[in-house]
Length: 169
Image 1 (tube, one colour):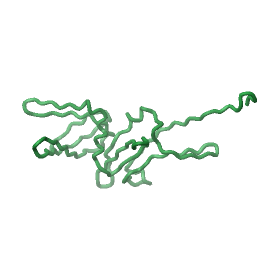
Image 2 (cartoon, one colour; image 1 turned 90 degrees about the vertical axis):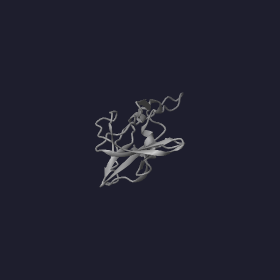
Image 3 (cartoon, one colour; image 1 turned 120 degrees about the vertical axis):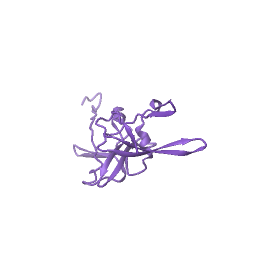
Image 4 (cartoon, helix red, strand yellow; image 1 turned 90 degrees about the horizontal axis):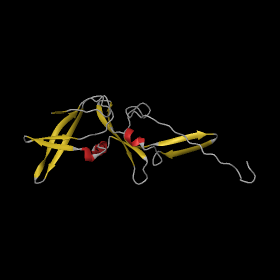
């Protein structure tokens, strides 16, 4: 300590990363419902617990991705998202699959082309690697006509950024 300047203060920064397997994260059981992410730090006799959220590395968004996983005899869907307005991390499991649209990171990259009366759509999505085939129903809405439902399936992906062909049921 310098008597003229006063005490010198130092900051401590902790960084970490985690991987969550929603199929076994609840004490060996599959998660269900909405879960909020907290971090607890015990250091030098001081303890703090905080929500994970707004103060984060921007690269986290590129690594955060929805996933399909096996939960017993059924296929479940897990979606990590940032809450509004506080931007904290939460995980929705078995809720609406509507948030699957969050897997479409850049809607401007969606392309639809027509050739010989056939439509072709490419929808780039960021999903965790698929361990098995995932059934999907796509709803195409048209003005003045009933919606058209297509039964598809996403096939195995080995890489999160890989392409998955679809098959029509």
